[in-house]
Image (cartoon, rainbow, N blue to C red):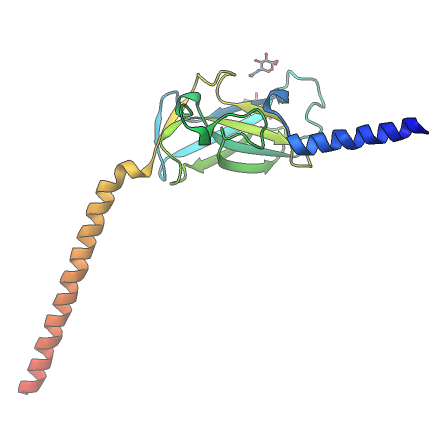
Length: 203
Ligand SMILES: *[C@@H]1O[C@H](CO)[C@@H](O)[C@H](O)[C@H]1NC(C)=O
Ligand SMILES: *[C@@H]1O[C@H](CO)[C@@H](O)[C@H](O)[C@H]1NC(C)=O
């Protein structure tokens, strides 16, 4: 009866290995066709501009390849040029440790038909060069496949986001004007009140 025990140990070990190390990007199949509205090299303003993402299954794969797909998670990802010397954006094959795609765009139930989502670039998105990737996840929320708007080297069809911080000046001017206006109106009301008080006193 040593054999079943050995098998059980092996089974337990493989479970442990699976839960300890997570899914690797290199193990995923590129089965999704992902397209997005930004033109190559286009500069989008964070907090203002919108991105429309479309995704669908690449039908040249055998039918049923998508049988385990439960949800699609669309993410905004750093291009290699914006990862240089930035360990906090590093690409790691283990997806649990990967920092390539830090910004979530949307998560939706998987559907074979053409899927579209329009997203306003969030204000907290930093200035960088990006592409978009979609992961297909199974019911255990593990990535099983992907698709992206760039090639496998992440060099084509990239776009840029300009963060809000580069445009503080106009915001500052607006807030200074607003404060000046509030102070002036405060004095104005004070003055009017005084005159009113004086007027009622002289009556
Ligand atoms: C679909 O998948 C096939 C096989 O991997 C690939 O050759 C083809 O370029 C893919 N089509 C698109 C539009 O990405
Ligand atoms: C998705 O759209 C393309 C072109 O817009 C069309 O050729 C294709 O049949 C559509 N696929 C599905 C599954 O609806």
